[in-house]
Each structure stands twice: as C-alpha cells, then as structure tokens.
Image 1: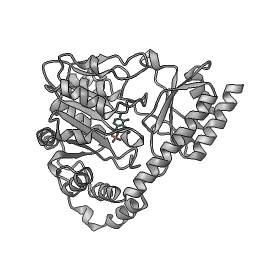
Image 2: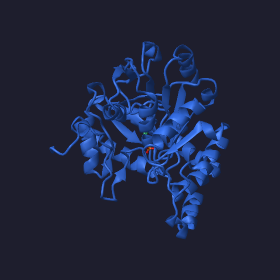
Image 3: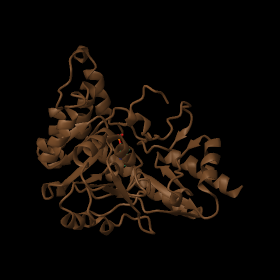
Image 4: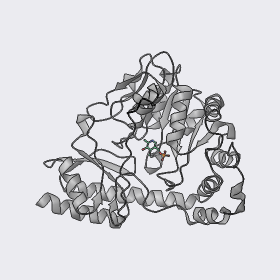
Length: 354
Ligand SMILES: *Cc1c(COP(=O)(O)O)cnc(C)c1O
C-alpha cells in the first residue's frame, strides 16, 4: 500500500497465475501447456526472421496474421482481432463490449480472470452457479444482462457445451454480447466460430498458448462481427498500437500453415487423456467429462490438498483451487506426454496406497 497508488489500484484483486517453477526437473502439469512444443516450422521461421529488421516497428494491425487466421476459418480479415495472448484480447473485449447498464453474467466456477477484469474496468457482474453436475446451464442466463462470458469447454472443470446448445441460447439472447472463450476448444470440443456469421453479438476468443503450444510467445485472437472487432480495435489503438511483435506475427502465420502438426499433436493429447481418465477412474477418482487438455478429478477418500502436496514431494506439479468451496477437493491434471502421465500415475498409486 502506498499513498501514491490510484484509487483503482487500491481496489484491485489481481489474478494469480499457476506457478512457473524455477526447478526444471519437475514434471509440470499445472498450467495446461502443451507437452509437444510448437511446430518445428514455427521455430525455424522465428530464427529466420530474427534479424536486423527487428529495429523496425511491426505492422500495427498484424494484417498478414489476421489474413491467415481468416482464411483458415473462412471468415474475412475484418472479422478477426489479434492480441498479445487471449488474456489481452479478453481484457479488451471486457472493456469494449461488456460495460453496460445491467451486470454481466458468467459462471460461478470458471476462469478466475473474469472477475479481475470486472474490477479493473469497474464492470458490474453476477455469477450464475453451474448445476449440480458442474455444467453451465445456459437457460439460467436468460435474464436481463449487460453481456455474457463463459469458456467452452469451461475451466477448470473441462466440461464442454455443444455448438447446438450454444446456438439455442444465442437465439434467445440477442440483445447483449456473448463471449465464448474457446481457449481449449481444440482438444475435443465443438467450436462456435461458424455461428459468428449468423449472430452479430457473438465473439469467440482463441489462444495460441494451449493447442498451438506457443504460451511463451503470447498470441491470441477473437472472431466476430466486424462491428465487434472494430470496438476491440478502438480499445487496442487507445492502449498499445503494437501488441504483436515481428516474430510473433511470423510464428502465428507458420503455426496456421502447419496444420498437420497442429492436428496430430492435439490428437495425441486427446488420446493420452482418454487413457489417463481410465487410469484415474481405476484409482477411485471421479473425473468430470473433459473437452480440454486437462481433467478435473476428485478422489473418493483422499483430499485434493493432500494429493497435490504429496505429488509435489515427488516432483510433480498439478493445480487445485480453494474457491469456490464446491471444487476445493478436486485436482486439475494437465495432460502431458505419455511418459509424464505414466510418472504421474505411478506417483498417484504410491500416494493412495500409503
Ligand atoms: C489459458 C487461458 C486463457 C488465456 O490464454 P493466453 O495464454 O492469454 O492466450 C484464456 N482463457 C482461459 C479459460 C484459459 O485457460
């Protein structure tokens, strides 16, 4: 605390990201990174373009990257916004599109950055409880609202909604913006990007950090009606003209070019997940259905807190959330490589038999 702080800063409760341990020998399964790393073509391109041109500013509008994203999803470049990680895209979307007279709505169990953005931008919000199976019940959102945001699949539960369920909802909620945060969609969930053409109040955000394995580079994007995108551009151009640097731009384009690498690695993660869920079930965990690259599971007898700390003693880092209380006994396991999941499984067996 300091008398030099602004009023806004006094009122902030910042987001706490998962630990990035300094010890590299740990098996890191706590922040949903992709075990396979970016496409070798992405790395080659970054190396190739790391040259004297870095003295020049990048394209402020990242046109080439927007075009490759637009081509990939069969939309127009003016339906695409890119930012420094999807967290930045979301922050701008909150400021650009969600500040209205009624409170915005999001699930009680969800990505914990949403209430943080609300504090930052002074946006009123109301949380809607997920149902007793931890599912987002969209019918509960059919109340007056200043906008709606939820991840699909949800985090940290991993539970997906179908594109039909979301469309049914969009038909009934057409007076406010609906943001679907598809950070994990490539691991077995249906995207609603195709619905952005039909619903001018739908904004879909994607990340390069999980399925495209570029968390270290910071790239994210949003797709939606050109008017929504223009609002994001207006905020961006009032804040930072150059959120995407020259190397990020090139890397993003290459990532979209190497589609077979992208699809293969996502498929490998999905496959590993299916095997791991079976093993967890065998160890007496109940596992929520997951359309993501992580699973959320609760053991029949042993508290999540104890599991997390004993795994840490064995050099394995996973994640748990204290709030809300309904999920405090669950553990979130990121799906790593087969080898990492084998080590995790062995450690769990040991802990649970002790
Ligand atoms: C990881 C994550 C993001 C943000 O990812 P970036 O690294 O900022 O692109 C957004 N939403 C959810 C639900 C996430 O888990």
